[in-house]
Structures are given as structure tokens and as C-alpha cells.
Image (cartoon, rainbow over all chains, first blue to last red; front, side):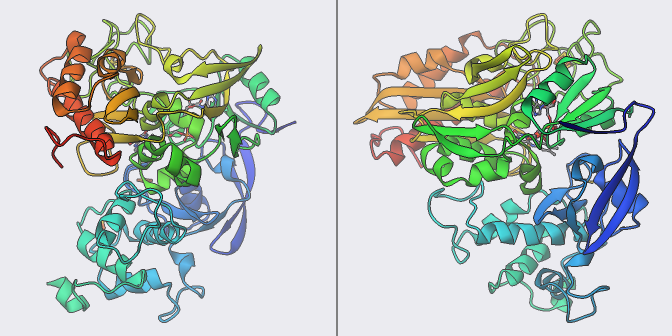
Length: 201
Length: 337
Ligand SMILES: Cc1cc2nc3c(=O)[nH]c(=O)nc-3n(C[C@H](O)[C@H](O)[C@H](O)COP(=O)(O)OP(=O)(O)OC[C@H]3O[C@@H](n4cnc5c(N)ncnc54)[C@H](O)[C@@H]3O)c2cc1C
Ligand code: SF4
Ligand code: FES
Ligand code: FES
């Protein structure tokens, strides 16, 4: 059996259900729409940023059915019924009042892990996904022993996090503080700057 | 972007039929390569047939090895305990590719069938035989840093970009294909083509051929294997050159081995001359470098890619001496950390 919506090239309207940050949306899209454009242009979800639109920067990262995913190279029609979480939806409450922030969001604030902030929603979603992959014991390119557990406390943690976050570029070069923030969120002490004032120097 | 009809079959036969019956139809899996090409105008299909819901999602034991469904994501394959233990070159190649996000999206079949990153192929304002047969090749006298050094032709000098394909070739993997005429098995060594005068055909697959799985056999060389990739930055970049190496050692001599190069040719380059020279030998920097030079005897370079032979030779020495060291069989001479 084949599901076919849009029976001819002239008939390209597709009816989709997408759950974004806990809210269900019904939306009619042109078959060519990416998830990114659907979120931003049709659903008004502007937390998700368009950087390169070609898979090369990571600013459009969301959690798609729980895993970090680019939205710019994803056709919306392929994701009918999907659950998406943007950086906005990570906060415990709608609008994300202080104190209700996700630990990764809080760590980005504490560590001043941005300058212009454009890459930040993608960085935050990617970090949440990366930490989850680490917890599940998935190795990375820099993991020495593919069969051993990846140790969060080992000497290689900086390298591990840098490698795992390599899909998110930051044009402002806030990498040092992004790394510190993710280490904080991973529950690991770091030697980096401890206050936003220090970090801002 | 040209508009298209989108269909989502839920069984293999319907998917094959949907593409086979329509010259303008194409399969789409994760979309991380094809959607980019839709945007760039490089691909202009009339119909997209989604192959992500055909039930091709399992990694299962198979004849002493593994059978990997076409829709298995690169991240899941790399994290699989049997792949990490018995096919480390495959796990390493996957982990060296793209980014954490893209590996969740990229499928096993889509990765093997991704198209070249030749800059002219991706730029529809320039001539390119692969994109538009008969139009010319802009890379031969243009920007040539990524160009092939082995097996190229006067019509195309592009290289295949997949890391996974290189590693799968080194572990003797076989691709399972369902076509309009039934099922067949294509060894990785035969899947991708050299360009010849038909650079538009990356592989031996015909229109309507669906990859359903990749089989990793119970290989005597795969257990001691690795993947080494040289690139412009430490992560999130395609290979300049790469090496998948797999060895079966008898003491400190080579009983059998596979060495496959990426970034040098239109297909993963199985270095058979090098392999023949090293069987029965000890793995030292000298023996490996000499064997690599024999493999490179017919290499053709230009001003922009003259670095590649030396780089692939060095990468091969690095990969093989590393494996020998790991096996504890390395002689100390000529092997540095
Ligand atoms: C920024 C960036 C960096 C990257 N870096 C790397 C890298 O370092 N190394 C690397 O190896 N790759 C890299 N990639 C490429 C990536 O691995 C591929 O885009 C991905 O593997 C393609 O898989 P997919 O499922 O998304 O394929 P799709 O885009 O869906 O399809 C690709 C092709 O395969 C065909 N196809 C898909 N499934 C089947 C099937 N079952 N049977 C027959 N045909 C099929 C499609 O018709 C299409 O022609 C990178 C990509 C990006 C965007
Ligand atoms: S090298 Fe091949 S892909 Fe690149 S421009 Fe020439 S024909 Fe096209
Ligand atoms: S906008 Fe998606 S990766 Fe850059
Ligand atoms: S904070 Fe400006 S791009 Fe990262």
C-alpha cells in the first residue's frame, strides 16, 4: 500500500500534524517545504534559526523524536506526526521563567556562552542531544577505545565535547564558554571562568 | 525548486515499482544529500518515493556476521556493540563522517549513494558531465584540490565522498539490492564505478534498484581494523584522503589484509597491488611505504592535488602500523607513536 498525498505535481498541498514544544499543530504545506521553513514561516516558531540552509552550520537543530536533528535538510512531508522540541520548549514551563530553565539553558546563561545569540538555540538543542548520547555510552571520533564505556570524568572530556559539538558553528567564536557551559550541564567542574563578568572580559 | 509528487510506500515491492515505473522518480531516505540537491537544482525529480517506512530498520545477526537494514541511521550503526567490537573500521568511519545531527538523519543506503562533493557538480551554472552529460568537466582545468588521482577519466575527475563506503569495502561487505527483476547481491568492491565515459552513473545500480540491506560477513580481517581520515579541520569535514585498513596477523607477519583508500578515486579504491606486496611481510614503515608507492605508480596529479599521494601513503603507514602495534606484533623499528 502506498500513501500518496498530492496526486499530481499541480496538487502539492499536504496536511501535516506536528507537535512542537508540546503543542499540536495542523498545517497545510507545499510539498517542497523543509521542516525549518514550516516551523518559522508557517507555525511562527522562530526559536529555530536558519544559518546556511545546507546542513553546514547546525543553527537549525531541534530534537526530533528525542534526537538532535537538522531541520533545513528535512522535508516536512517526511515528518508528519513528529514531535519536535526547540530550545524554547526545553524550559519546564511555557515562556521559560527563570528557575525553570533546562540545565543546559541555565549553564549557557551562567557561562555567557554566546555573543550575538544566533547560533544559541541550535547549540542548546545539540548539547542536550550530545549529553544524552554520552549518557547512553555512544562513542565518538575521539574515543580511544570503542568497546569501553565513555568516561565523563576522563582526561578527554574537553575533546569529547568539542568533537560531539562540531556540527554547531558559532560565527562569534563563543566556543570556549560553550564548552564550559556544557561541562557544567554535564555536572562536571571546570577550570574556566566562573562568572559572566569574568567571561565577558 | 521544481515541485514533485511525494509518495510513501510501506513495502519494498511498492517502492521499487513506484520508481521503476517512472523515469523521473527518485528514492529519498534521510534527505540530507538529496534535499540539498533539490535546493541547488542539481536534482529535479518529478516524484519522490520515501523509503524510510519500509521496515528496513534492523541490525541482525546474519551468517556469523551482521545484516544492516538500509534505513539504519549512521549514528545507530556506529553505536552498535557488535559493530564496535568486530568491525571497528566501520564504526570509526561513521564517527568520522558529518556531524552528530547529520548521523541521526543519514541512512546506511543513503550514505553509500550520496553524490560527489565536486564543487562544480553542485553549481548548476558550470559545465559538469556528471550532472549534465556532454556539457564538459569544469574540474579538470579548474579548482582541483579534491580531484581524483587514480582511475579518473577525461570526462570526470571527481571522488566519492562517503567514509562508510570505504570501510565497508575493507570488511568485504555486500549490498543487497531489490530491483524490478528480483533480488541480487553486489559486493562493495563492485557497487561504485570508475567514471569512464559515463560519469553520470556513480554505481552499477539501475533505475528502480532499491538497496534493502548491507551484509557484513564474518571476516577474519575485520576485527583488527581501523579508519584514518585526513581533512582540513579536526571534525565535520569531508576527507582529503582516507584509509580503511584491516589485517589478519600471524605473529608479526601479515596473513591477509584489506587496504581501501577514500578521497583518491571515483569509488572506494581497494589497493590490491599494495595488499599483494604486504601479504607475508612484516608491517614496518618501509614495507608499507614501498607497497603504497607501488599502488600509486599510475597516480596522476595536477598542481592542486599533488599533495594526495604523499598524504595517502602517510595515512596508510599510520593506519597499518597502528593496527600492528595494537596487535602487539609490531617490531619497534620504523614505528613511532
Ligand atoms: C554538512 C555535511 C557534511 C557531511 N560530511 C560527511 C562526511 O564527512 N562523510 C560522509 O561520508 N558523508 C558526509 N555527509 C553526507 C551524508 O553522510 C549523506 O548526506 C548521507 O549519508 C545521505 O544519507 P540520506 O539517508 O540522508 O540520503 P538521501 O539524501 O535521502 O539520499 C541520497 C541518495 O541515495 C538514494 N537512496 C537513498 N536510499 C536508497 C535506497 N534504499 N536504495 C536506493 N537508493 C537510495 C537517493 O535516491 C539519493 O540519490 C555530509 C553531509 C552534509 C550535509
Ligand atoms: S569532476 Fe566530474 S563531477 Fe566534477 S565537474 Fe567534472 S564531470 Fe562534474
Ligand atoms: S541552517 Fe541547517 S545546518 Fe545551517
Ligand atoms: S553567538 Fe553569535 S553565532 Fe554563536
